[in-house]
Image 1: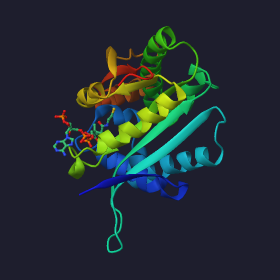
Image 2: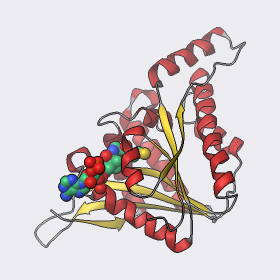
Image 3: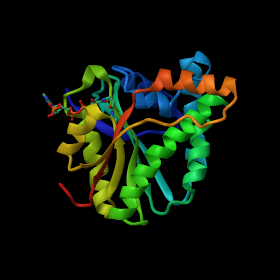
Length: 243
Ligand SMILES: CC(C)(COP(=O)(O)OP(=O)(O)OC[C@H]1O[C@@H](n2cnc3c(N)ncnc32)[C@H](O)[C@@H]1OP(=O)(O)O)[C@@H](O)C(=O)NCCC(=O)NCCS
């Protein structure tokens, strides 16, 4: 079986988001539920919400951010139709136009208002601060690349599809002379290491519940922590031109 890569048109983003959810939940990567929570206990509604957000971004792009979804599909001939087998969201940032505070606020709105949102905001801030600290020290405040998503569907793993999706972004980052900074899920760390990424810090996420919360919000915080933790992520970087 052979595979090829294609850019994803806006109208297919919904399909990508659905595939991403399936890939990250088989088996579950705990960090995924922090980034993409299920809203109103309804996975379909969640997929539609996230796809709508991505479509909105695609229609009104930030001029400092090149946000490219690519898909891996089975190669076709005249008798077959393509099957989606994996995808990646490569993000090339020429200049960071939003502050960490703004990013945290916008991200945490994916979670319901109250204790869940507070928990998500603090968790996201911990992860972002860790990445930013290492990135500023090593790459400076200039342009860089990152991954918004990266997956192969479970039935097609270990066939080289991840390598194809990675190679595409590495070549583009190298052409632009960009370092790449990512938050990796632990099972994917060896894969990234084989592609020139090095570990900078391992974070066992342990957000601290603020003092003085009212009882209901404190209980929501505790429920969210019970549902999502433990989460471990690895901040990794690949310097431009590293093979
Ligand atoms: C991480 C992930 C994207 C890797 O995708 P993949 O398509 O399996 O990646 P590849 O096939 O290129 O490489 C994976 C392994 O298959 C091996 N492989 C590649 N082609 C092969 C082939 N034809 N035959 C046998 N093995 C092969 C690679 O050497 C590698 O082996 P290793 O893990 O023992 O070192 C995938 O496991 C995944 O989607 N995981 C869930 C989501 C996730 O964690 N994403 C990353 C979040 S940070």
